[in-house]
Amino acid sequence: MPKVTVYSTPTCPWCHKEKDFLKENNIPFEDVNVAADHKAAQHMIEKSGQMGVPVTDIDGTIIVGFDKNALKKALKLN
Image: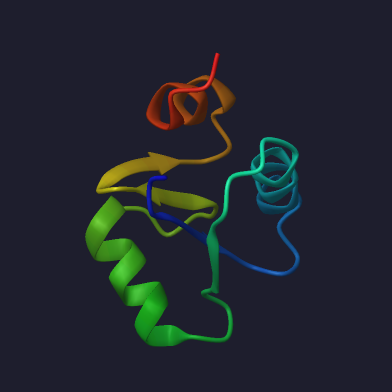
């Protein structure tokens, strides 16, 4: 199983959609609230070059935004 980290905020609707997608596909993930954790927010920006959420790290593959096709490809889902 790949290591999945989702950088998100509690008020982001796309973050909720992404986390729902991962749950529906039984993909375990770590949810990092960048609104509450400023160090994590800096780390996310360094990794992705983006300030917007969600940013997803799947074993080092960075996906910006809720991109279902990119998530499926990175997670090897059909």
